[in-house]
Length: 317
Image (tube, rainbow, N blue to C red; front, side, top):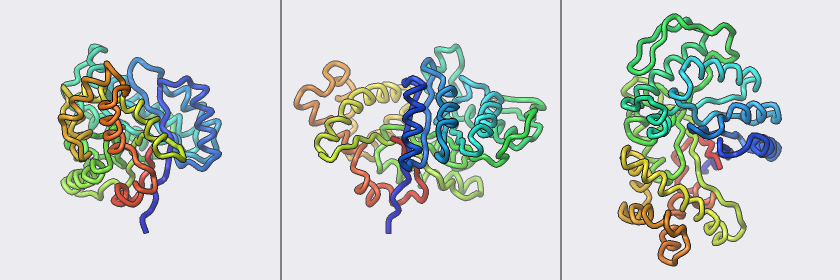
C-alpha cells in the first residue's frame, strides 16, 4: 500500500510575522507534520516569525527552508539554528541552499561557485553543531578554530540541502541529511531526482538521504475546476520569474519542464506572455491549466503516482 506523504505548510518572508505565527499555530492544531519558512534576500528575515511559531506550537517541526551562506556566514547560521533548536526543544529543522544568484550578486558578492559555498557551509555548520573546534579551508568559506560557546542541544541535527540541478542533487547525496526541492518542479522531476541523489550517495560511500521535502503548489476546494483556477494565478506569477532565473542557471528550467510532459517551447512562450496578460486570454488560460496540471494534482492521485518512490516526504503547501 502506498504511503501518503506527510503534509507541511510553507510560509515565507513575503508574509508579516504575526499572520505567519497564526498559520503555524493552526497547522500545529490540525495535525500538519511541519511548517517551513522560506527566506530570500531583501524580503523579511524569517527568524522573528520562526521564533514566534516555535513558541506558539507544541509538537510540529519548524524548519528554515532555506538559509543561504551569503546572507549569513556559516558560523552565524550555526549560532542561530542551535539557539532556535534550544527554543524549540528539538523541533527545529535547517535547510541550506545557494540562494538566488542575481540577488546575491546585487549584494556585491561573487556567485561563481554556489555549490562550493553550500558544501563549505554544511561542513562548517555541522562541525559547530557537534561542539567541535572547527578549522576548515573551503573554496568559498573558511574558518579557523571556531567553536560554539554553548552546547547545541542536538549534535547530530540533520541538515537538508536544497537542490534543483544534477550537480546540486549529487552534492546533497554526498553530504546532506535530507533533500529540499523548490517550487515549480513536477512529480516526474522528483522521481528522477532520487536517482541522481543515489549517484551522489554511492560516490561518497554512504546511504542515500531518506528525507525529502518538496514545496508543492496546493489549492484546496471540493470542486477540482475551481481549485485549478485558483492555482493558475500563482503559476502565472511564478513561472516567468523562475524561467528568467533559468537564463543564467539552465538547471532551473530543466527542472521545470524536463519531466513535466509539456514541451519546452510552451514554457518559453508562457514566460513571455504571462507578464503581459496574466491568465486572462483563452489560449493562455489553456496553457496555464496544462502547466498547473503538471505542477499540481489532487493529493490522492499524487500518492498513487508521483510520490510512491519517496519513503519519507513532507511537502509544504
